[in-house]
Length: 336
Image: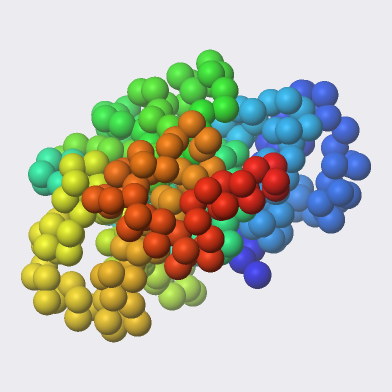
């Protein structure tokens, strides 16, 4: 079971109450009580956290609930990870420290920074690592909205994303989108994250002269195992941008990662996967996402996934889901 610290719900109770909710029966429904989520350093299942956000948004008719909650939180919810990041030399090092120790806050989140094709920009991406993944638009908007604030705070407002990506369909046009992000997000993307100029990674961190950040980083280093994204996760993070320019090949992926194709395959094999398996898993996830959107025709989806013929897409659906694209869509409609 993947847990998350209770600080993740900081501000939840006052926001829920302000929007007209009755907090105690709501918490009881999710197997929690008020003292439990108010306790610093407490733990709860990350699935429960995600479910609470989705349920609150539905119950309160507030599709921007997660976004609002992110705006009343700050970097301190990450505890010592936040302090260690604030003691970094530049934005790139701060992101690396958060990525390396984010599992201390919750192992259900992954953060990575991946070069984009062309070499001028990077994608700073956040991924919810639950499998199977439940509906989690609220958790994604909360996390990315908070990350946007942190990015601005660490850089003194100098780093501003060129693009903001959200992986779900747009469910609201809340004014809080403008408050959370410097540019209007692009919805229905394959990942959640920010596109940043690569030079932003060298921006110095605005920090004080106290020893607290250094001590926090040394504490993390001494008490917890450093954990970085696997190569297969980095490969998967590169694929969305390469799909847009129809260059999602192993040669291009290797080039973006700064390695030879043979080296890419060898390192992936050490993780127990092949490039084709990573790409196939990525395409399966996209297929599910697109098939759940009734406005998209099967021929369109096949083309968006890089299939020359719709028949090739149909065969892949049979392998992935055990049924045709039409049957998958019909079955999905029955679950709504």
